[in-house]
Image (cartoon, rainbow, N blue to C red; front, side, top):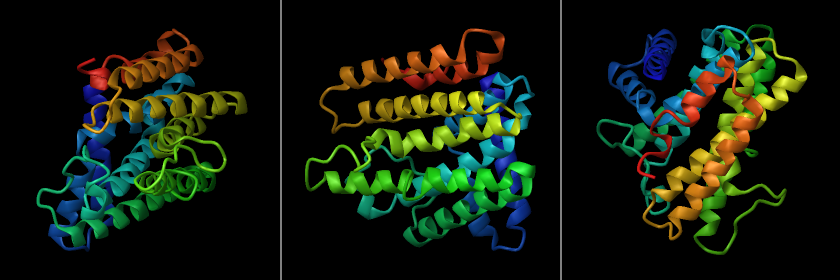
Length: 262
C-alpha cells in the first residue's frame, strides 16, 4: 500500500515539474527530478493523503498537498548539501546526481517556487489558505527558522526559539503539520478535524526529526531520542484512533522503516 502510494507521489511530482518546466534546459530539469525522487521525503509528504482518507475521502484528494510538501522539503534539503551546512547536517542525502553548489541553490529555489505554483493551480477554493500555510511551514515560522536555530546552536547552548518551540518542532514538525492539515482541508474537514490533523502531523514530524537525529554521529543519547520519538507517535495515534480510516496514518508511523534499527 505505502510503496504504491510513494510511487504515485513520485510520479505526480515529476509530472508537476515537467508541466511547469517544459521550457527550461534538460540538465536543470533532470536536477529537479533528482531532488524529488529521494525516498527520504516521500513518507512525511504522504501524510496529506492519509489525512484525506482519515476524513472519509479518497487518498488522491490530498495528493496536490503531498506534491507541494515533497517539493518544499526537497527544496530546503538540497540547500543543506552546500558546504556551509555540511558540518551541521551530517545525514543529508545526496539529492543531486553530481554535487554542484550553484545547481543546488537554483534547484532548491525553483522547487520552493514550483510548490507554490502547484498549490495555486490545484488547491481550488482552498488555494489561498494552502499557500499561506506552506509559507508558514517553510519560512520564518518553520523550516528556515529551524535551520537558523541549528546554526546558532553551534556557537551557544540554544534549544528553543523565543516563542518556546523546540528545533525539532519547527524543522520537520511544521512541514508535516502542513501536509496533514492540507490533506484534511482538501477533504472538507471540520475545524475540529483540521486542528486534529495539524496536531497529528506536528507530532509525527517531531518524531521524524528525533529519529533522524538519533542516527546522527553527534547524538550522545540515541535511546532517549528514540523513546521520545515513540512517545510522540503514540500521542498522534490517540488522535487518529484505530479505525480503518486511520490505516494509512499508522502505516506511515509504524509499518515503514521509520524506526528501523531500533
